[in-house]
Length: 169
Image (cartoon, one colour):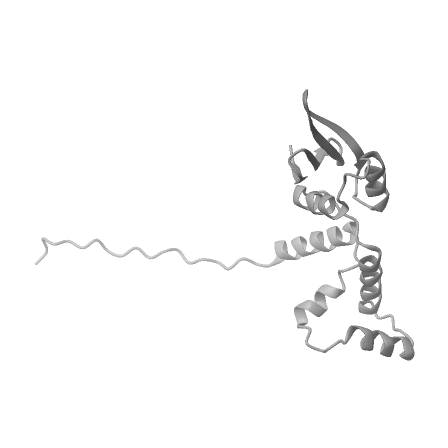
């Protein structure tokens, strides 16, 4: 069972994997009768709606950033923050050849204080930033098919050296 734990000793929030690619945010409390746990929210991808639902059910005892961190440690899919999602879409569209009007481009460059020190590998990775799992899977399949078609180098049979005979004169 994959899970990640955060919180204090008397109250602890954790994220646990459930069947069929679902996850749960749970809250465990220490009571006089022993520890008790309850499910705060179920999700497939941790987003703001799941966090708000969990916060409402936790009576305000939940640290949202700690839950996000616990979900990442447990391996749960975590939705991007809105600003990160917007930046990913913008970068993906710019990498695909779209362009901004000049005033917006200048404003963006000024705001980000951009320099041209990106490596070729980083520039190539930008094109994949907004790619979904299906496109990534297709690219991986194509890459594997190409790898299968690369001819293998023929290896020459190893030469066997004659046995050294110490009795020969």
